[in-house]
Length: 292
Image (cartoon, rainbow, N blue to C red):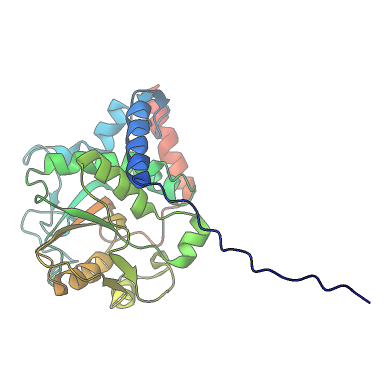
C-alpha cells in the first residue's frame, strides 16, 4: 500500500528589500557612464578614434553640426512645432498644415538620413541597446543648443513600446534614450506614466495616413498631470501622430506643456519603410573612405 506523506504548504518566498537600492543602482549607472565616457573607442559610423562610444569630431559635425548652427549659416528651415525640414522659411508644413499638434514644440538631434540613420538602425534592427546612450547624449546637446531649453521640473516620458516589439527586441529604444537623456540633463524619467490602450501592427508597415488613424486613442496617461511640464522621448518621428496622441492625453489630464524630444526626424516624404541596410552599409563605407 503506498505511503502518503503529509504535505506542508511551502512559505511564499519574497525577495529581500534593501532601502535605497534603486538610488544606489542609479548612482552606479551614472558612475559607469562617466567612467565609460573617458575610454577610447571606435566611432560608431566611421571607425575613427573617439571616446566613450561617441562619434568622432568630423562625424559629429556631419550628422548634427547643422542642427546646432545659428540661423543664417546654412541650417535647414524647420517647422517650429514638429522640426520638419522645409524648402523655404515661409513654406507650410505638410504635417502641421491640416491639424494643430497637441505638443508645443519639437527638439531633434538628427535627420533620419544616411549616414546618421545607421545609428538608429544599429540600435533597433541590430539590438544594440547601448546605442541609446549616444542618441540620448546627442539629443541633450541639441536641447542645449536649442536656446529655449526645457522648463524647470520637466519630467521625461518615453513612448511605450508594443509587446511584440519588446519580445522581438528585448528593450524599448525610447526608454534607453530617455534614461541617457535624463542622466545627461539631470531630469527624472518615468516609465509608468504612459501606457498603450491596445496592441497593433508596428508603424513602419503603415503609410502616412494609416499612421494617423492607427495612433488615435492608442495611449493613456496616469492621473496627476495638472501643471506639469513633460517631455515625450522617442527614437524616430515620421508624421508626429504618436507624439500628437500622447500629447492629447497629457493635455487632457492637465499638463502645462508638452515637448517632443526625438533622436531623429524623418524628412518629408518618408521613404517606403525603413532605409535598406545595403544603402546604410554603402553610406557608412563611403564615409570611412573619406576619413582615410
